[in-house]
View 1 (cartoon, rainbow, N blue to C red):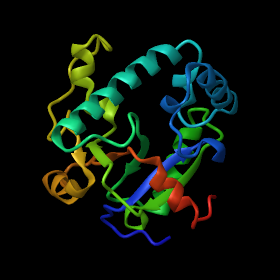
View 2 (tube, helix red, strand yellow):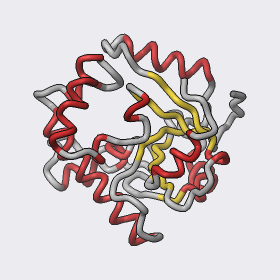
View 3 (cartoon, one colour):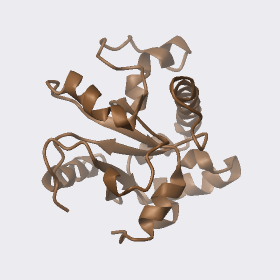
View 4 (cartoon, rainbow, N blue to C red):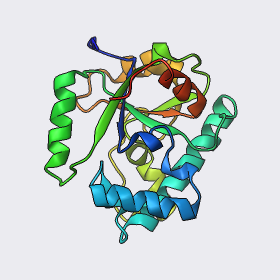
Length: 207
């Protein structure tokens, strides 16, 4: 795949196995979650440490809070998302195949041995109605709110433009223009309609 720079279309997705490719952990029941997360920990997949038994429940509680907050905020600003929890992607404006490989190598230094990645061009999706994004990872973007609700004892983060907010994907160019001089700029993309991902999957090979 050719990747233009800056890039505002290519979504980057980490995954462990094809079976759970477009199903985030929040979509499973509590009983199902345990077995799936045990598999990720055993295989040492992407950021597996947060799913380790000692950290799992606190992480999932925080994650559910953030997903619910984003769902409510998006519903208020725009319309009700198709599902109550999203599938997560990243969008890096300076993305290249070499930087992807370097990120994977960096995570391997943290003992993450079995992580695959997938690239999806937003323009290849049949519908973008239920796609949103935050500046940075949503856990980072909403850290101030997490602290207010007792999820963290850390000091509030530095105030950054567009942190603590959610946007529709059609606003990407506008938000990028406000932040394109920032060294650490990246976006988390939330796809609230897994069906469009499955539709994309029908015509694309999964590495």
